[in-house]
Image 1: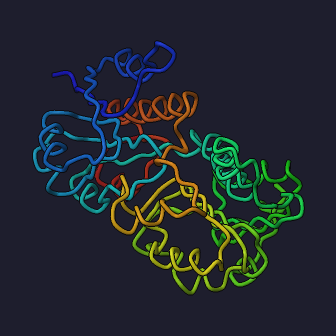
Image 2: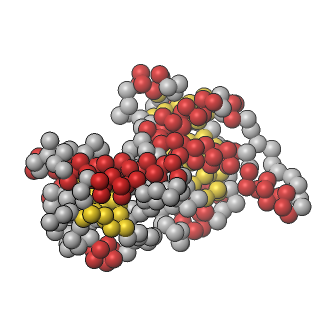
Image 3: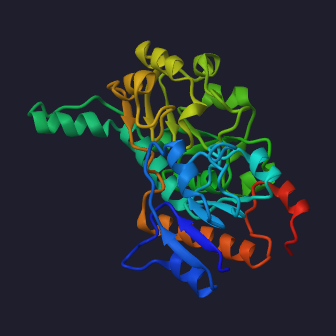
Length: 329
């Protein structure tokens, strides 16, 4: 029986479906059934039944949602983050989990710089001022006079560094997992947590979401940031203690924040209170939402699925422990 692949996120770009083409050319069937936020668990549970693979969007993959997925061999996340996937549960079931690092790096880096410019240069209030007939805006600052600090410097962080160098910014990075020499090669200075918080005019987050990183940006973190500085987040909303950020903005300890993501999406409660603040520029978790990036992501995800179903180890396996129990080469 031919394995069938489910596509639950966008796969058509420029009137073509490269992911579908890759999968069908490899001899597998493909069904496109797009999901959408908030990705209800019961819907995920029902739709996974019978499929061997999925190009996954924002679904939660838990023992409950995978209960009927007896044939599932691989979950190919259409993105970098995999915090919605319970890796231990997948490994226990022999399900490979992959992601698409690098495919969206340019798009997210562009977005991080857009949020940086929007917050620092008062783009949104300036636009509103012109449209209201007021025609004035607060004085801002040259980026070349500012220091940018990055927490995390993988594919996306490295692209942010390259763009920030074009603006002649001083760039600091705190990432204990990256060779300091590699950071210096791209024009960044590796520093301690204390130094980056004390000296950065803008902090940009490029960290994965994990239990360890939950509310990574807390009240102490914010209090240690340079007075009058800015916070940019194009990673995950739950990296930030949103109540603490509201307090830091309300007290004007922070001058502003550019947030592509929120702890609750779409925002309600504290998340909604945060994004409605005048010093916040918010976006609907859309940093990777470019045609080129989404096309690349779908292709990488499809390649991972084809490799796995044809008995090869995919390039970007997240739960590598699962390989010990599978006959992949």
